Amino acid sequence: MKLSDNKATLSFSDGSPSIEMPVYSGSVGPDVVDIRKLYGQTGMFTYDPGFLSTAACQSTITYIDGDKGELLYRGYPIEQLATKCDYMDTCYLLLNGELPNAQQKKDFDYLVTSHTMVNEQMQYFLRGFRRDAHPMAVLTGLVGGMSAFYHDSTDITNPEHRHIAAIRLIAKMPTLVAMAYKYKIGQPYIYPKNSLNYAGNFLHMMFATPCEEYKVNPVLERALDRIFILHADHEQNASTSTVRLCGSSGTNPFAAIAAGVACLWGPAHGGANEACLNMLEDIQRMGGLAKVGEFMEQVKDKNSGVRLMGFGHRVYKNYDPRAKLMQETCKEVLQEMGLENDPLFKLAMALEKIALEDDYFVSRKLYPNVDFYSGIVQRAIGIPVNLFTGIFALARTSGWIAQLNEMMGDPEYKIGRPRQLFTGPVARTVKAIADR
Ligand code: CMC
Image (cartoon, helix red, strand yellow):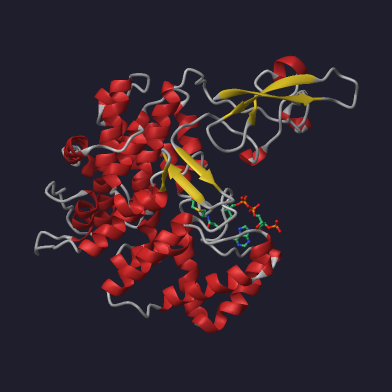
């Protein structure tokens, strides 16, 4: 970051002396006011619940221009990465800062591929879960549990350990997600097949059985790979910030990523794809297209508590570029599967059309986000609804790890420790129980 000539002055109406704070510029995007000395100089904190105006770190990984609807990984537009690269290129880029050349790509693919198996003991750990457990509950446990299996990569302060943990996490997440699925439906686990690519291997572990040959469909493989690319990173979102905060205590990388998985589960974040598909299915059950208008009235009624899932974003105040790419993939997959007339897709298009023209959404700059179409794609591939967020977690692992590594390598890194405005009772005395 670069010190700007501009300076911020904070003055107070009670006559306290004003203070001057430095302003820093990044390579693009809003400048930041450096308030680190504020408490020392004034005894005051800043108040910003939800981090609406607070940059918690400097980062070189992902940039979003929410007004333009632009998303860049290491400077590359998401549209180019989604059409010219695969998920392995994207992982390499996020971790290393540059796209791999042909040899680097070959080596990286080989490295990841040779770590796809998980310790055999993990399946006994998995068996401890109820079969009807939500896959995200299972995944949170499995990912955290990895720290109990891979002792040689748990020192977060050691770059070599972090590198091994990064490769293990990226390589083993598809295996764990597929195992969680197979366990739920009572089928035998399918071991990774290293002749397949990353997405193809995942499809194989999900849908093959020991009884029959399973042939990976290239259209579905490409669609899944695109889902992985689009979900790989999204700068300082809730789960990424959780990973950073958790990792900032010096805990091991597996524990930090498990914290990210847990955070992602929520319906306002990664759980939105599942919530969005459930919403579409509910509208379909209520009467489908004929009920769209009625549903939208509920969404606009603040007392109903109903939100249009897959719409709106804290940062995007324009069409989420990932949603456009996902809509394209959605059409391809539905066509491939002979589902061009899929009623949920029609419903989604109708909801989108109304929302893009309705003043409620227009005035609040609410546009479709990535989750609006990703659920329809995954459902067409045959992925069960409650595994959608697990797929998101699988894809986001590369981003979480890249962000964690960046934080650990940052000389300004400190344990994350927010402050508070205390509004509870002041010091008082505990009364004997008879007097309470
Ligand atoms: N449906 C109806 N109204 C909405 C919606 C929605 N989906 N999203 C926001 N609003 C309204 C909200 O009621 C508020 O209205 P008002 O100003 O009159 O009070 C205004 O828009 C601003 O909303 P907010 O909740 O203050 O915005 P936020 O930045 O805190 O929340 C969000 C962002 C993503 C949590 C929210 O838009 C939402 O709940 N969307 C649905 C869930 C969803 O699709 N989440 C996936 C996000 S993309 C994937 C990811 O990155 O994880």
